[in-house]
Length: 417
Ligand code: ATP
Image 1 (cartoon, rainbow, N blue to C red):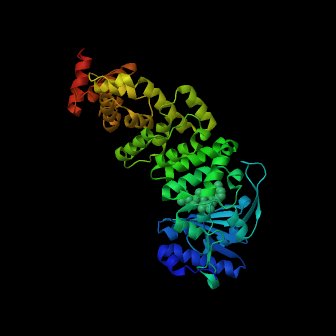
Image 2 (cartoon, helix red, strand yellow):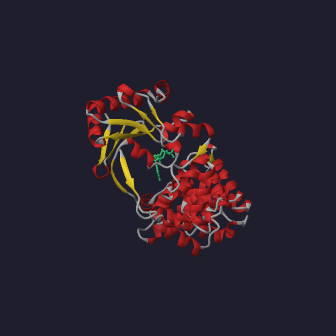
Image 3 (tube, rainbow, N blue to C red):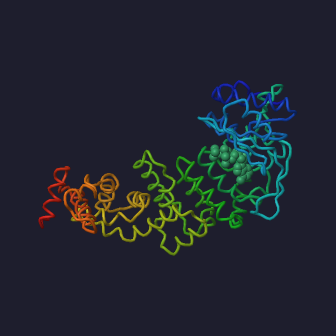
């Protein structure tokens, strides 16, 4: 008989989510469909880790069920009819509904052919036993656990286990996913899974740059300590297969840890990415950008990182004035500057980079072009020149007040500084 986890589910899910999933079960039942909670949230329920990315699998028509639920709640509905999926967005959480799918894999690395299926078809196409559990939501079986691959036992044993021997061949992105879960949860690869992962590591070469980039972002964005994933990937020979110049050594670990200490309130993924490629030369970097098909802002951040690193010795000079530091750093993206601040071993360069980020980048004169015209500066290039001189004087702390700025402009006009 199936284990029933109703009490666990009722205390784990926040009340508004619980209400909605119960509603989904009732409506599905009335429509002659089945609906199940699946994937990460079931895993995290047993691990007592918060996860409110709610994934539902529907035996029937997920889009139709989503329409019914949207009509009865305040959810904002988005539908992808082609994939038989829908998303319901609420202020504090969102629910994905997908029609149960059967997948047929053709060529390794290619996306599979998909057709509607039953829950069991949907579960077997999943990556690991711990992600392949489902909880029934229909009223008559609410809370019944469907665990066809001993996922719960693997959770207890702290194991990451694939569901069939060709899993990594079918989809080699699972190699990266395996390491992500292993490191995040402090689990181990189950022995056969590790053997197969080592056997199939070359299959990463069958995955498109776009999909690899997506997995790389996942590691950088979702994992609290992404360096652990890179270190493990290096040990298993995964990293050099992903991209030969990538390194997952302890230096990288120190830089990532320092990034977290330095930057508390901003998203770290781009800085991590910049640090991953910090030691590359421009040639390697160009190939990296093309291989992972990096979007423009990311490509700019990594290029600026490497270019700034190559010239950073110019900041290793204690005599630089703040305005000189500003002029030197202004062309580079903020993320590239942040990454170089993390990585530099020169205390003087570090001081200048910090000064730029915390102060100089936001220094502006109080007077603007109109003020200067009113003060008698003639229209044309002279306005720009006076503003630039004012800005530099502000940066260097020569003037600190509006009155000081006005005096500065007057003295400039009378042939002063
Ligand atoms: P996270 O905690 O990182 O958000 P998640 O388990 O919610 O993890 P998603 O990437 O959102 O992961 O995927 C949702 C579910 O879809 C997974 O739990 C897994 O069952 C399945 N899945 C995702 N990617 C794959 C894949 N490449 N192969 C097989 N199943 C996958």
